Length: 315
Ligand SMILES: Cc1cc2nc3c(=O)[nH]c(=O)nc-3n(C[C@H](O)[C@H](O)[C@H](O)COP(=O)(O)O)c2cc1C
Image 1 (cartoon, rainbow, N blue to C red):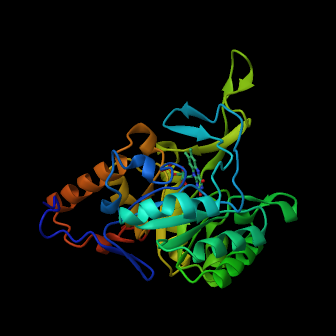
Image 2: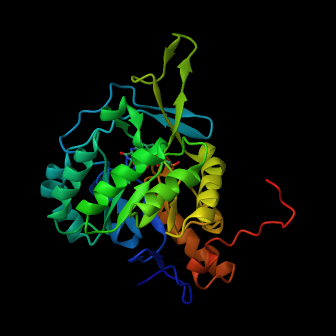
């Protein structure tokens, strides 16, 4: 029996893709989805994004790979993954059987890496969209992150757009002065939606042994600590682009989802909260339905961009 309260329409559109609700599991925090099937009904989620896929399998970074911080965690996984071909052969058939809406997170060290991964996935059935992780060092440009430079952002998105028939989401780096520049570059290069955002560079030191708490020294901060910072990026980007935004950063409750939608997001992803409670995606979804009913919200998509800004507000 459906648990959805009568009268709450949770459907959202992300470009041409219609999702049954705005809750999406975030890349790198939900494995390949299959690991979560004892706890989460994948078919209930709006979508799930798989761990970032590269052309060849990657072993990842030395341990320790995660450490807890006040209101968050820092990770340096090193993009460990089984590679796009193995994903198609070993994981996708099971995800199809479970009727999951699968978004493939794609990354590379060069533009042609990105294109090759997309080509492999294009031939496979059961991928609803691509999410381009552009927070990766471009080895052809001295290791600069694609996502911090609007020109590099435009180049990688244009190449991916040419290779992809499916919807193309671009996951922006938050490590920029003006998110509007990279957001506009991605939009004008053919992105169907923007995902805002990835983690923030961070360092945790153990004072007792004077070493980093992570094998790779530095890592990326995620979790509730980043929520207000990323929410501002969603808000700023929504003022300059027309394509839909998917917000993520520190979401762990239904109210967090509502806030991101008011800031301008059409849908959201849930990441670090999956480490606290592997059932977080479904729990937030259930709470969201209840919240909407209690607050007489009948069509959730109407909340998008509903923030009320005082006319006199200067910042
Ligand atoms: C352990 C871990 C692994 C991650 N791996 C990826 C990845 O492979 N690709 C990617 O685009 N983002 C990755 N991310 C970033 C998350 O998808 C998300 O953007 C970020 O954690 C912020 O959301 P949150 O605060 O809800 O976790 C990873 C995050 C964590 C914590």
